[in-house]
Amino acid sequence: MSINKEDISISYYFEEIENQVNEQFNIEDLMTEIEQTELNNNDINLTHMVNYHENFTVKELLLICEYYGFAKELKSAKLNKEQIIDFLVNFESDKNNTDIVFKRQNMWFYMNELKSDKFMKKYILW
Image (cartoon, rainbow, N blue to C red; front, side):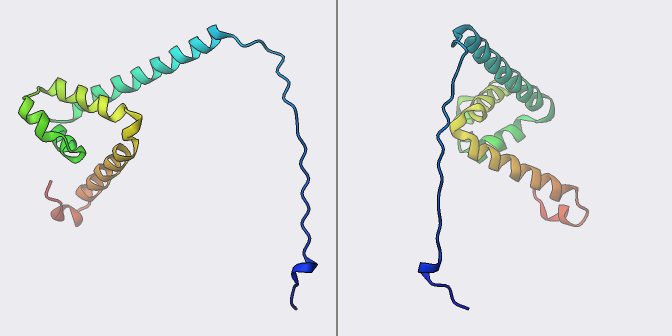
């Protein structure tokens, strides 16, 4: 059985629906929403700072910085642990760095999985 182009018919129907907004735009509501978003971002940053402070050594933090490509600059500036953490959190919270941060977090997860496996841990040097 063959189908010819002439045998196929496609029809479209578009219906435009008007959105009627009866509410007045309220700038105070918008400002409250923006403030809440900023507060949530600050909470997330604080959580990351506490995590880095409690669960990572300076050496491990510098490995993360090395992955991002700025460990040499931090070492030469002789930053302490708090300053390194602050720099990392600022870098990771920048929306322009989302892809590399996600990739780094995935890689760290995979390395931890390999380190926890009896067979594979002998192949992980870090």
